[in-house]
Length: 263
Length: 170
Image 1 (tube, chains in turn green, blue):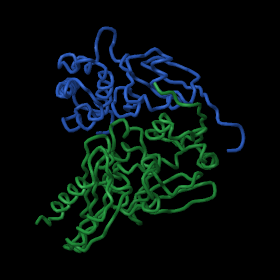
Image 2: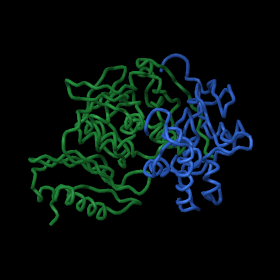
Image 3: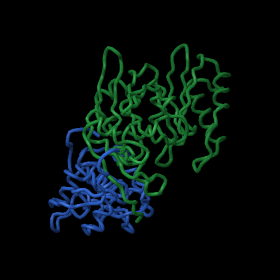
Image 4: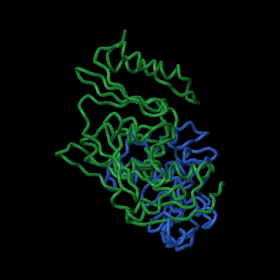
């Protein structure tokens, strides 16, 4: 069995103490579903982990009816997200996507913040949250910043977080009518994910999992040439689940059916 | 960080299969290492070490957890259940009975993980239907049975244990 290298633990229920501790050698730690395997493989070698699970400020799910948003703490697990009545009411597509993340063990320990900050391309939440227009609050001892999901996730396994920053909350506008999320998946991670917001006037298409990071386009309803140009222009990954041509073909077929543009 | 360096060992108090334990554990120790190497509970198997295969599944405070990638320092204050804690003397747990009756195992290596996942599922959702059973069990891998007998066993256990859950419908 792989043995992890010596590791320190910083644990506090106080957000400021946690923020004072986090830097490149003191890695934020919650569910550990990505960090512990990464440490086991030697890809990440922090001197210590900083446990975020006891900070109540990172565990809330709160609705603001006036603003029309749900604010989700970074340390909320996928299972709690998918089961929460507020999320199921106002963000049903997000709740459904969370109920199918990874496997039942990942869902009971893995967190929203960990999922976004690990920035694994083959992920559901980033795609759905980008489609919803969510914003992320990131914080360090120096202060806080608000980022769009596009500004947070900048590439495969890459975020714009500074080493001393953590994601604290994600503010998600209530789901608009006409939203859906579909994915193709044969292993524990999605091969292709597509979030749609379809209205009479426009098609908002967000593609994830097969792209380095979730990618969104707003297309005038009925503009099949514009849709084709978007699909053809996407840089899709080549991996064990298939070459780019295959993924593009699946994407094209799904969109034709979902948008009723079958030739 | 300023001040003293972060401790590399921590005292953990927990209940394992109904027994109270207090141990000093290194932060780097996984739950699987704690169970197998320090407590001698080798019923929990380790295979992929990437929390993909489910062989190492144990139940912590009712939730299924991959013991290969969970750290023992997180067990403080929790109740841990492993496959060794299911039977009461010679009386098997209904899930174990069902796995025997449905021939839901061949080599048996993945079986403790499947059984613990099913126990967690039926604890959370006693009347689990086929969709719910697949949603929970599809994260465990078996190379022998082809899964149909496993699904039969969990369905059988679900019907015997009756409806009801511990509060959420997941």
